[in-house]
Image 1 (cartoon, rainbow, N blue to C red):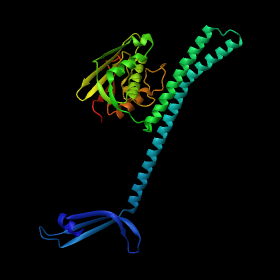
Image 2 (image 1 turned 135 degrees about the vertical axis):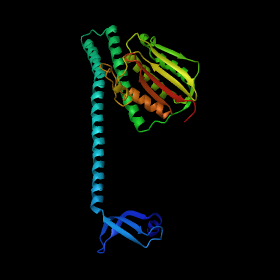
Image 3 (image 1 turned 30 degrees about the vertical axis):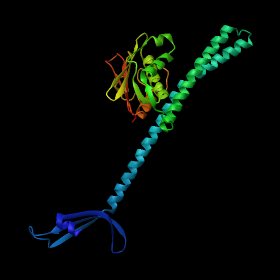
Image 4 (image 1 turned 90 degrees about the vertical axis):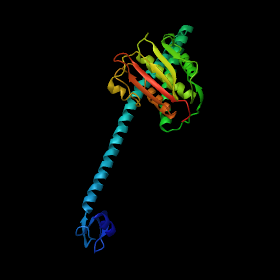
Length: 305
């Protein structure tokens, strides 16, 4: 300490010290060299300040701040839980009610002896639609749980995004939807990827575009290779998100101002982002000119990350 004070003119340190009676206290110690001009020090001054109470106050402040952060996190988790329960119960209630109504109608028709082929076919179609909707909702919830737990391993293989996208578009079997999707791409665009997972990403993005874009407005899908990556853009012609919504479209259960009346848990874009990031890629969403829709861009590396 004296050597440092001699060299630099001053030494300072904080730490525990012991009083003559054996008790400990937290001290700030300053040692200052005393000298005449450039001559060697002729002595030193040592000032020791008792900072025990100050340190205890700072420690208490840190504890209080940590408790406040913990309460804030807990409150946020409770709000997220309540939001999830509200959205999930609302979305699950619709297909369950439809399923229950279809079954009751079939049973009533059977009891009355009026269960002909047309009624049976109509009832089974309603049951099928409700069941598919329930399956989709449960699958989204399971995907979020697995992605958050990092429990799903990617099975990356060379994948032609163009061929994959053709398959995705073909899944939209409703004629009015399939005709609205316009795909522009070369014949090949290869990336190392988990095909089923990317299929899920693009299905979510196109389904989202179809939901928020009024028919018969088209949904444009374009695939192009760039330096070291392949870029996939999906553009709709809906009203587009506002600035506040754009900042949180990839949040779990995030739903925009224009989502009223549109089914969904608000998990599709969140799931898509998590899958793309795990592939070493990135996904962005931006509003085109106001009122002219949204463009989602997925960029994936051509080499394994």
